[in-house]
Amino acid sequence: MPAPQGAPAWASELALAYESGAHGQFILYGNVHDRLGVGARFVNLAGYLENELLAGFKVVLSYDLGNGLTIERGGEIVEQWSGAELKRPPREPLPALQYMSRYLRYLGNLRALGRESKENVAVILRGIDQIVPGDGTGYEHGSMTSLLREWASEVPFSELPFTSILIADNLNDVEPLIAFDAHTARIRVPLPDTPSLERALDILRAQQPHAFAADANVARIAGALAGVTVSALESLVKVRGFSKQALNAADLTRYMEIGRASCRERV
Image: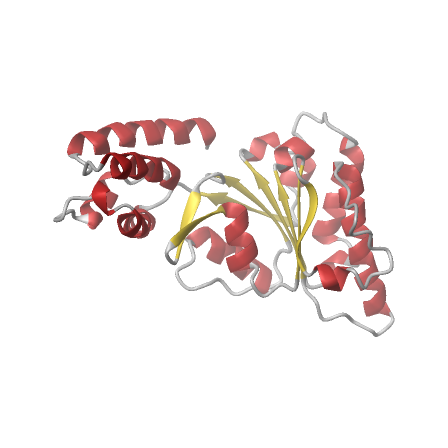
């Protein structure tokens, strides 16, 4: 899992922890609903993880309460597993986690028999603070907590080329036995810094040229908006581009306050 060129600091931290063998399970929290500029486009956090940070993983599974279990990549590999039921993947959280655990145990059994499979597996769990909330409520809370803790440190999971990435708005809203497990790395996704905003503005300028004056100084605008989410910035630029009105100082001041207030509420 080498970090891609130009990766944000949190992604490089995650990649280093995994590559070094220090951790296999991670909780990402903070500014997890923002967008990231990649090349000439924007992606959400899950898309960045799947297609950039985890690009070298042959099997990527994801789960959230709304969509259930999804095999994002490697369906043909999982299909070779005799226990696979790809036609109707589980939607409820406990059956979904059990499904993934069975597949990983299957790979562990192959390893024990000397027939080690070469595929590396990643699991992305979105909204982990809703799946196993910190107040102990929720569907089959204890069973899911036990499974997730096994993924972090127990054999065979710890011996496989496997990582689980759990995404939450707030760390304190996650079951403490998972959030503060010594085997789980906690990585905060911060508000975008000035270089990140400058990359976002370069993308937006290409997409919405009418939103920028001919002599617009992208570096200065990015510096003035440091701490604002990319999503808030994108919304501003789209409105100005549609109206064919270039950004002005009043826009920057207003959106800087709106963006920062929104982020304080979420992070």
